[in-house]
Image (cartoon, rainbow, N blue to C red):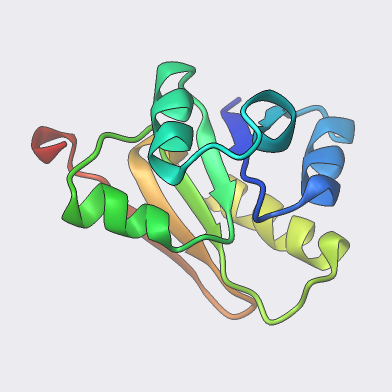
Length: 121
């Protein structure tokens, strides 16, 4: 089962729902509160955790600045309802074969999965 790191932008409730469902999950706000995105990315990579975030800046860090990653799941939903977002997240987790090697964008209508080219990062 993949391991996750919930970004501060995503909120406490998603962390709690993942935790209660048995996922191996940590929260940025509990362990590296206020850390910059690049520090969050480095921490996640070191611990082999997939970042769950609402912050699209991680795409910039990975694809433009070529920083390494252990995977990102970006929630781009129109709703802030944690239960709805959690259901979308679970669906994306089940559809992504190697989430630690992907940048996954999750909306209400689509799940877009893009492989991260580790040869360039």
